[in-house]
Amino acid sequence: MAAARRNELVSWIETRLDCSLNDPFSFVSLIDSITMSSSTQNNSALDVQPKDAKRALAEDAYDDCLSCRVTGSAAFIGLGVYSYYSGLKNLKMNEKAIMQGTTKYKMGSRRLGLFTISATLVGMGIYRAFN
Image 1: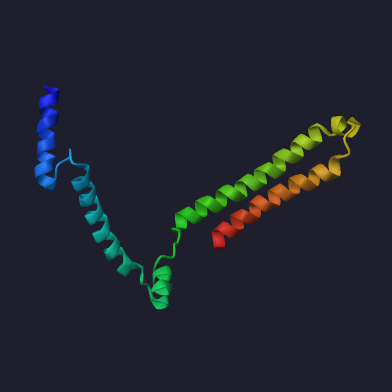
Image 2: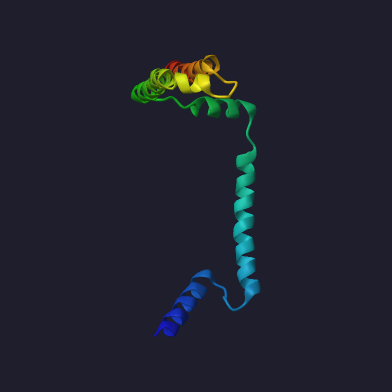
């Protein structure tokens, strides 16, 4: 039953394409003729003038909606503020252990790193809001 269905499908394809699937050269020539006709059509599309390119780029400029900007900037700013306050809280809780540790990175450098990460996140939120 499956073989009969396959033969029926192959004969339908052969009649529609006007070639034999058993003859690889006729099938290849059909594919070549399809690709050659599409490549000649695409060459004219590649001839773009500079004015057309600038106009297309200006039309393609992406602009966020207001709710997207508000949500994105609020997320970055909120993450920056949260990381600053939770980081300071954790530093104060672990200050004694940090000062007794053998590492050269004591409280000052850790505060600086915390401030840098938090300020970067808040800056990204402000940038997201206005650009």
